[in-house]
Length: 462
Image (tube, rainbow, N blue to C red; front, side, top):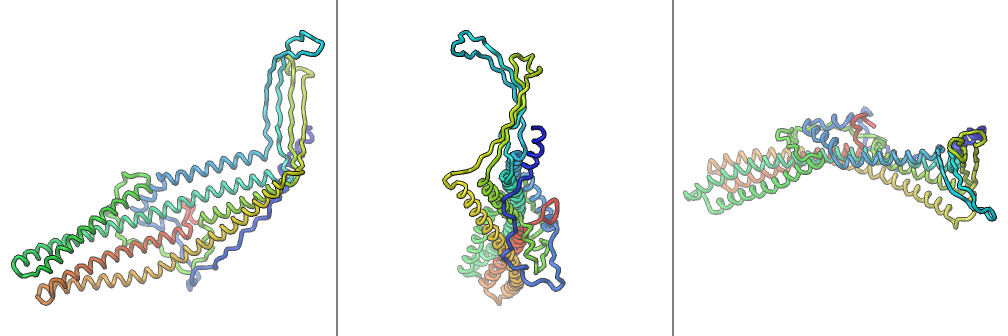
């Protein structure tokens, strides 16, 4: 038995695999986004700290990565998958158990009354039902568990990427509302001063009731807008606190303005191979590898299985004689199981495994196409937003000049009061829209960062 054990163990551990040879499906997308740059280079940032270079935003992201509870759950899922993989991997090696037994009793024999009470001591070491993996069933199950464990790691990276992106988006939303609030405060103060002046002019008979009511309407409109923005701002602060896992963190009132925010630019012509860095796509491919390994386990079920049981021990009637001469015993019991009839269960399991692999292939290819569309949309939005912001900046500057001229014309008695109020209202709207567009520009940059898969915070580009 000792001579047979090493060859049998080596044969079991090196059993053949019936799983199909894995081949990554071809990506059903173009090779690049847009037209490559003239120099053939496409700039990419190095990590999220280099991409989001606002110190206040970096502090929020650091807090989120440290305290966010959803990210902790994703990390614990890795431990769960690692443990399951360890359980499955352990099945590839024999489990050796030591046992000790004691029994005391009397067994009556026919025709022999009054049999004495006897003791029985036994100590043994053995292997219980270890499967010799000739056809790779256990190996395929282990490979599938490994792929699912790796998929859980990619899920954690995807959760990290999503958390960084959500925190940046929430931060820019909070900064946009803060800037709109400051704009509303200054506009409200201006309109209240204008209303006081209008009231005095109306009392002196120098202003019409229409002008007075218009001034009052603009003041109350500014107050309503201020109340709405205050509510949205507080909610945005709460959202940041939830993402950061700490509601006590105060918002930074001296943060960089949206217009001054400059994220690392990305050149056109980015290769679509950059999608390989996306953790959700790597997670989908790990799921595909697991489904591929499941086919090997299902195929192996059609072939005989061999289980090995061994037991080496000693038995005696008294504990002092347990390890004495002549008390040794051993058992070597291989068991062969050949599937003969199971009502088509094995064939159905194989069909199920193949169907799940086909589903995994379709999901993987669909994920690639979805990822390609997200990047393409973000790049397209970036180009159009740039033009829109330039146009809106010109609108804002024109409105500023228009208000200045309207105030001068009104002071000289050339323009009506309503003309000046209309210029103030138009300037407020154009400045507010300019702030919103700056927010959309930054959120679009966050979307592009997330769509390209982000960068590992420790190891750099994947």
